Amino acid sequence: MKTRLSVNVNKIALIRNARGSNYPDLVQVSKDIEAFGAEGITVHPRPDERHITYADIPQLKAITTTEFNIEGNPRPQKFMDMVLKNCPDQCTLVPDAENALTSDSGWDTITHASFLTETIGALKAKGIRVSIFCDPVAELIEGAKKVGADRIEFYTGPYAANYHKDRAAAIAPYVKGAKIAQEIGLGINAGHDLNLDNLRYFQEQVPALLEVSIGHALVVDSLYYGLQNTVQMYLERLSIKDLV
Ligand SMILES: CC(=O)[C@@H](O)[C@H](O)COP(=O)(O)O
Ligand SMILES: NCC(=O)COP(=O)(O)O
Image (cartoon, rainbow, N blue to C red; front, side):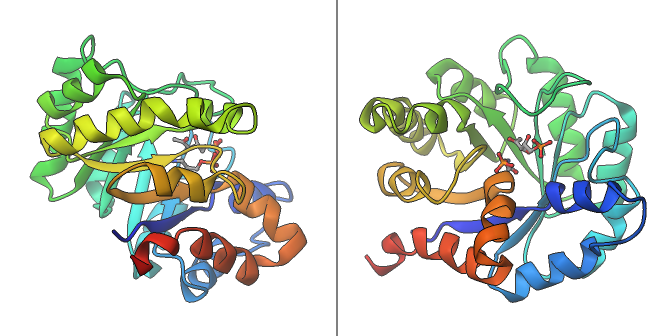
């Protein structure tokens, strides 16, 4: 089973925005990331546009040749209008609060079932694949299926936080959750705080992992190893199952 690496370029945009000019050039860096072997570009514009701006979206859509994934909370109409206008390959719905520092949980797919059903219907009508950010909890995964999602993206923050304490315990809920998702026909993505240490074990253990989106650690690693080497190193971590 091939697991695609989608690189989240939020932190490239964050550095650019620090000086208010176009340096680094987000579009060029994203093209280079694809040229270095990444199989997708992910963006997660936040309401304050502190990293990815709404103006970035059409430019990135225009140059992405692999897979373009837009993440975010669809509650603001502005977000939905932007996604429907730009038609990415995939939209990942994330329930972040407006002022969230970063993503910190998956959807309650039961409480928000009618909103999610309506939102997913609108996205799928435009041919956009929809993934739902989800904790590895049976009822929530089943809820994601009921509201019409094509995939779930496991929120891997807790896995990453506990990996060095007890990796077998940290992975257990995801292995169980992935089996449920497979049984009911949901594709499986994963992301948040995945890194060079914890990525291989996650992919080895979680069946049928289609895609990981990785940003923060990958950009930090590139300070030490360079961007091209770093993309290659992440691809290498994901390559073991390709050989099987
Ligand atoms: C959904 C998810 O886990 C990532 O998109 C993460 O939220 C990246 O966002 P930041 O770069 O703002 O932390
Ligand atoms: N969906 C997760 C993502 O895009 C990147 O998360 P992180 O690697 O920046 O924590």
